[in-house]
Every structure is written in structure tokens, then in C-alpha cells.
Length: 387
Ligand SMILES: Nc1ncnc2c1ncn2[C@@H]1O[C@H](COP(=O)(O)OP(=O)(O)O)[C@@H](O)[C@H]1O
Ligand SMILES: [Mg+2]
Image 1 (tube, rainbow, N blue to C red):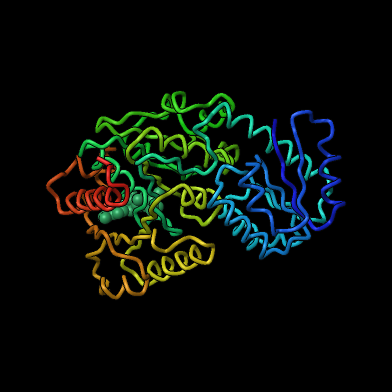
Image 2 (image 1 turned 135 degrees about the horizontal axis):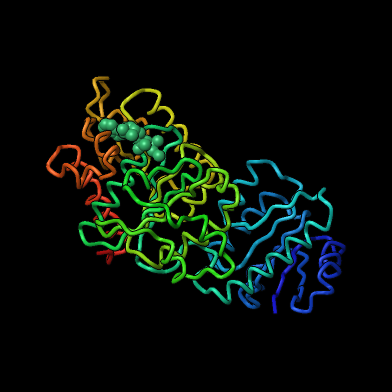
């Protein structure tokens, strides 16, 4: 039985919700007319779904979403709002809101969304590891390697850091979320027999054990969830499913390292949402530094805590002179790694062997191992127990 709490000043809204769900034996609707009692009611009744109606002002609705996300992360929140601007959508998504339905959309959309959300509640009871928050209470850590610019070295850094962590004895999963053009398979010379696309296709039956079967092992001990083979398959991979899969992967490893596309899209935001720390990669040129500063500022505007972002400089010894301290100040994120430029890197890509294995004594490999070590220790400081 699913319990929906609908909150709106207008009794007509709540009546329509009841009417829309009339035929669904498994749903019960309770209504609230003011925000005053909402926290107490949620505490008391622990609803599955909170439906916020259009008469609640956007600012108040978002405040409510924020407090529900904090205190009752398992509650699914659906918003019907007069404000369906991109900014509103992003803010709502950041707070884990399942859907924002513009008030002028046909009413059928509200009932369809509620029915789908109720189905997910049933799903969740069957898959308890999908608790919807994306962050179950394990000691494992999820990190995203991020830059909206291509070619700055995200994949090189993600592959090598993940390999170095695995070589240090940690249980590590690398996820290639560059869904269209992911190349971690090439960098690690892995056969894409199984990819994230298979996991998504079998989503209805998916649990952590089954998901483990879609990981491709690398000889370092690292396990990889590869990007789809065909770029067009990326379209089937919805943000909600990515969030759930990342939540399950967290259960399976000490570290989940996510490589991302050069984009600022829903997939990247889902990765960041599921992450404890974001490692932004910049190269030593003014355009890349500016791009990093702007995209981290944008993350801040979307409500992401800038305490979770760190900076990694790649090709840091480039001839273009820039002072690292100045870069750190300009980006206002702590600099945690500097990776020199080295021809060994493209050579390692061509060989399909990460440079930390291919040329372990080189300066570039050492800097990547050092970065992995920095990530391992700083992430375990937070949890106190990651190996
Ligand atoms: N430190 C480095 N030294 C030399 N070449 C590098 C270095 N980092 C990256 N590259 C080169 O740049 C290319 C792009 O890197 P990649 O990690 O694929 O970027 P992104 O994932 O950000 O698009 C790599 O194939 C590699 O040849
Ligand atoms: Mg890449």
C-alpha cells in the first residue's frame, strides 16, 4: 500500500489527486492544506510520496523539498508548479525531486507520474539497495572526475587513479559515464562484452549481485562498468536509472570512480549527485582555468556544496606559464594533484595499458599514484574506515 500526502491550499487539487488514483487499490491519499504541519505529518505518517501542489510558492516548495531530502530521504517528492524554468528544474533535481510537472500540463500527467512513482515504491521494497538517496550508509566513497572541456585528461586520470587504488589493495569500480564516446575500455584494453547498457536493459530485475556480473575485470583487480558500444544506446540510459545503478555500485566497492563526458548535462549532474567528492580537471591554460571556474561556480549556483570539489591540474609543467597557487585561488578549490605532460601517456593509451602500470617509475605515473593516494587518504579521513 502506498501513502501519498498531497499538500495544497486548494481543496480542489487534493480532490483531483484522490479522483485520479481512485481505481488504484494500493494507493491512499492524505491531504494537507498548509505548510505548518507538514514536518510533523511526515514524521508521523512516513508517506511514500509527497505531492506538492501549485498553490505552494516555488521558494517554499523548494525549502520543503530540501528539508524532506535531509530528514526523510526515502520519501519521493513530486512537484506541480507554476514555475517550470530550467533553473527551477535543476534546483528541484538537485534536491532529489522525482518530477516537476508544469501546472498547465494536462492533469493526466500528474496521475501518470504518481502511478509510476508508486510502482517505484514497490520496486524499492523489492530492491532495498535502491533507497533513492543514492548514498546508502556504507563507508565506500564515490568520486567523479569532472570537466566540461574535452581532452583535458579526465579519462586518463580516472583510469590511472582507479588502477592505482586497485593496485594499493582497494576494491575499486570504474564507471564510464561518457555514454556516447566512452573510451576507458580502450585505455584499459577491455573487451566490451558487457556494458552499462545491459544493466539498464535488465533494470527491472537488477540487484547488486546481477550488476556485479556486468562489470568487466581488469588485470589490476579494478572492475569496470563500461560505456555502451553503440553511441545511440546512450539514449536508453535514463538519469533515474543511472542514480540507482550508482547507488548499487557503492554497495559493491570501497571506491567508485566515475569518468564523465565533457558536458554539463543531466548525466554528469547525476554522477555528481551520487558522489562524495568531485575532482575537477583543468589544464594549464587560461581557457581551461576559466572554464573550470565557471562550471564550478555553476555547480555552486545549483546548490552543490563547493566543499566537495577539488582541483587536479593536468599537463601542469606546460610551457605556458601559470602560477599554480594563482590558479587555485582563481578556481577556489583545493589543488590536490599536478600531473605532468609526458609522451608516455599517449603511448600508454595506444598500448591499452595505464601509465601507472606501463611506466611505473616515470614522473607522470608517480604523480598519478600520488593523486590516488591523496584521494584514498582524504576520502578515508571523512569516513574513517576506507582501506
Ligand atoms: N599528462 C598528459 N601527458 C600527455 N598527454 C596527455 C596527458 N593527459 C592527457 N593526455 C592526452 O590527451 C588525450 C585526451 O585525454 P583524455 O583523458 O581522453 O581527455 P578527456 O577524457 O578529458 O576528454 C589523451 O589521449 C592523451 O593522449
Ligand atoms: Mg574522456
